[in-house]
Image (cartoon, rainbow, N blue to C red; front, side, top):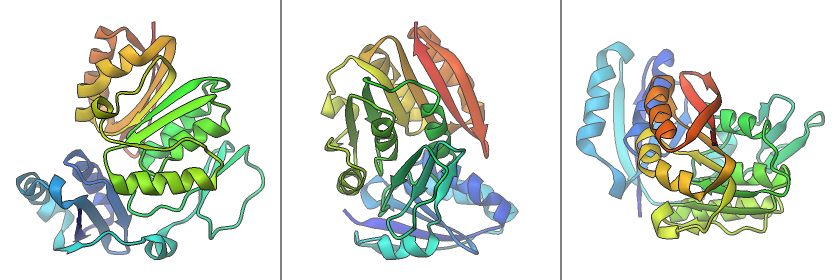
Length: 275
């Protein structure tokens, strides 16, 4: 399926806001540019009315100029080489592309060649999920990565000593890219294709990772809870700080208690435990 490309010129202070808003309506890939952002979504997932509503809401304040087009799926390495910089998550992990050199001083290193997949470590949600993972014992654990994207969180679980990892995504492009990244990092797991209901992973799992968006998380949280062992951990991100209350309320109803949370650039990430 083709991707739709939207080149959005805007004021710098509105880049993160627009990325957040567009993520909520199905956009899954972004590039920050000198003039604003480039945003991408599968043609079949595009909701024109929702998109127009977002653009209209910020048009004047952000001084938006918009152009759009369609593009076939291509190898995105050349584009990412122009825009992709390594990421350091504290001293825990250094995330780089294969065309970057290694850096000493980190406990772990992840090599990611992102194509049209979300989750490179640049976005605040992925950064925070990696940081949360570093606080949880993965040694010998079964881990499920929901909506895996580039596979970066599954790779982190592998580096932290997980015994078994399952990962999947709804986009075949992400699956292909994720499996390439698994190979780069010595992960034997193969990424599945589909939603959690279609893939139907077999629990129980000790740790579940879900960096998606609020609506999907609310819809699927009971499934996550059912798949978790007692005292197991559920790590969530992909939503705003003001969405935490809604997610925590449902989590409590399902026997999941908030252990810790953090925020970055108005994005939140939670660690919940099944009690």
